Length: 114
Length: 112
Image (cartoon, rainbow over all chains, first blue to last red; front, side):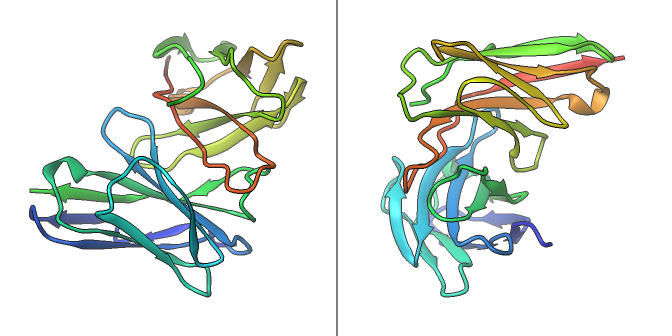
């Protein structure tokens, strides 16, 4: 049973560029949440997708956008990259919008902005 | 903002029992308490979840007093591989759209 798969694992981008990160949820899960984790900090909630719509959003600017596809996979897009966007980006999947049985996280995409 | 307070770090030796206490004074009636474990360069991993009293699984135990304003994660006989960051979260896990809000967590270091 595949867990959450994220790609790519590592990425280096230049300031001002745009980036797309991808996530395939755990088999049977239909909800995807994205998190940003800076070094030494806890994961910060970006947004959550369910039924192909953004259902909840954290305190992140509009430069951060996402999409969920009919097969429940998801993309996170970040425009006009800043140095401060360098972080580990985590995708978490769950069944339905509640997390009674816990979220399953991927291993993340390490984004470095130079 | 995270609704929980945990110690920043803890140290232990192999074979000891480790108890990490989390304070959540403003926990709501419908909130559950959930703990996650995170190793470097990996995503957090669900450990245990509870609402009241005591919950035990193959990995840990979770003790929740009657007032639910705090909780204690207990790791029996830790090993070097238990060195990780542990996060305590509270939230209404039955509510649609609940997002997990993480604090800074507790860094547990286990030595031989």
